[in-house]
Length: 70
Image (cartoon, rainbow, N blue to C red; front, side, top):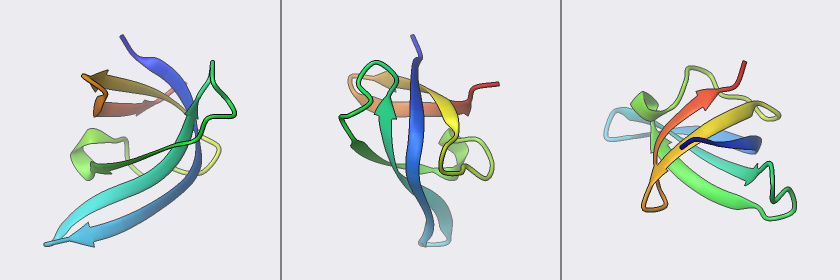
């Protein structure tokens, strides 16, 4: 089940020729608790930005997919 969150900061970086994104986010039901994650380009939608409302899919607290909420 996806959880709604907001991106507060995002920084793309390359590692061994692969694009990754490091981002700080908070879940909608815990707006004051900042969390940090790093995901590969294939686990997140193109061109994530600060302020985006997102849906996070996670398995055992490991993010598997990040989609932008429309």
